[in-house]
Length: 245
Length: 224
Image (cartoon, rainbow over all chains, first blue to last red; front, side, top):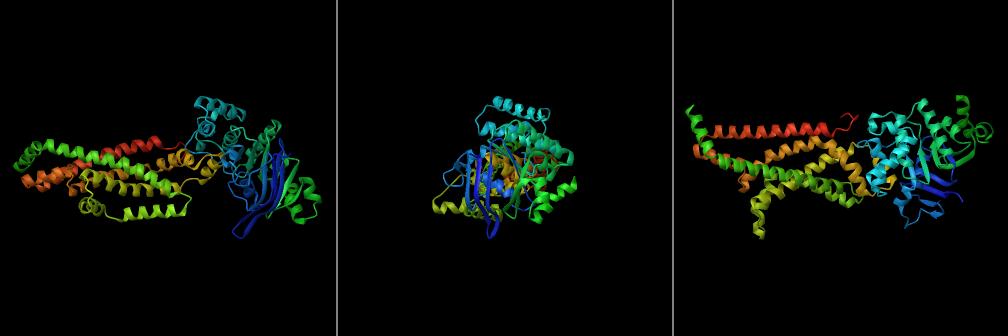
């Protein structure tokens, strides 16, 4: 059974249909990559999974439980899903260390010492221990990204969700993020990543899911999608990758 | 010079009363600055409510108390309420009246700072599983308070200066004592000049404290 099973998911904002019958599985231990152009509904899809956005219809099963209905402990659900935002969204009034410990102390009830030990372990895992006392504004984009990942991983989530992890980074840092995601994958961290960065997608997953105007149009390897997919639009999107290479 | 000598003699004679008045001024200023900040934080919290009617109510509160002259509010409470059987001491009326007024201003300052926040952080806190009150306490409030320090300390200066209005509801604070001094020797210019210098000195102390606080609370790497 998949960790996350999304069936017939629809999200409308007033009359605008943003997600139109999405079916998607995320299996434990895999890196699932969802690609698509800006505004295709990728970020909304992620926000439906942790109920930051309420789906209009359809179901999302997380560890076998439907989490779209009433009576779901939404905050407990959110604590099981580590979310890394496009602009990192680190708390700018807290140091890197405090960014990681805040939820451990206030949500998990850990003492400061316990929380710091756990946080330092995660920061060291991402080579961020030396930057523990810096404030977000004093760190680079790549460091912010790793701090945000450490904040997510510290809660031992069942899945880490990454929203456009390289959109705010330069190519060098983007490659570092790809290597980092690869490393976490080898450590058996389940990840769901939405991106329009073909280089990133190609380096962290064998197969990608293509979302277009709220509909999943294809799922295959980038090489196959760029050359053999019957839809010209899909070939054009993934063809950019081939041209870039 | 004899005028100054006479004035200074009267000043020193009445100094114990003037100092008592100064104590009352400081007591009122400190009290309304604290209560006004606390109520301002509460008003600001409810101004972010997800219930529209609460937001409308809070907006009405802020508009009402910013729009109404403080002296009218104080007179309404001190001279008007006894007609309905509600009597309070001048200090109590001053504290309540000022608190409602100052809280409205403070809430408006905090709201302005809130509008400049990165709302992605609030979404991140929701995504982490924090409750709304926890988000307010650990993410929103620490940041808006820091960003509002110049406005909030400016409000404390206003509180000190405006506290002189309280003498009109029989609260014998510093300015009331200076009035008495002026009435005894009719040296109005010297008496009010003295009052102005004392207020200026106190305001200068608040400004120095405000600058110290501003430097302490600045978030490293974030430029304002």
